[in-house]
Image 1 (cartoon, rainbow, N blue to C red):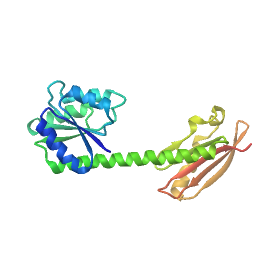
Image 2 (spheres, rainbow, N blue to C red):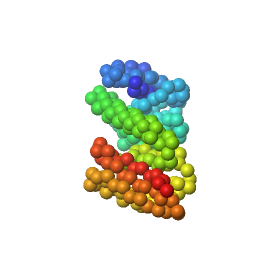
Image 3 (cartoon, rainbow, N blue to C red):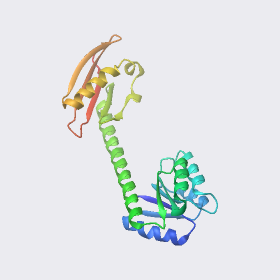
Image 4 (cartoon, rainbow, N blue to C red):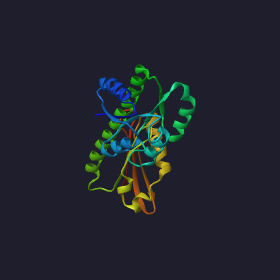
Length: 225
């Protein structure tokens, strides 16, 4: 469930936002001030924060800075809620404090709903990537359990690597320039490549295997002699 923390000292505002967002099948958690919000962040996994700029204890900027300074909460996106007549000044301060978006009060329901849908979509995509990475890891762990392979999955960028699990002597011999060249060739031309290279008295086999799935490449580097 996607958890949204709504921080506002006005209970009517919290109720209105909560009623609107629950139609998106999300879980809405309320906090009436900064102290309460920090407590909720300790208790639950929060995926998005809608933060009123003017609170009775902390102001929204102070609270945003505190949230962004903590390792466990720094990645949570923050949407600031600010009155129209103070928007320009508050938005600039909000971005400096770590907020990445804003809505104007009185809140337009369609705009808020659209923004929240966007962050839900981003979270779904992130979770899909994590799931895919874990699937790769489990499959690769089985393949490499008894062999000293260096294994990477490339897409537009590096998706998975088991380099940290490899023997330092083996890892230090690999030719990153050769890997970059083979992976780029495989991505651009849609082909697989294999090449044997001897370095430091160790013969390594490089294989860039085109998986034919969203332009993904499986790279294997293994000792053959």
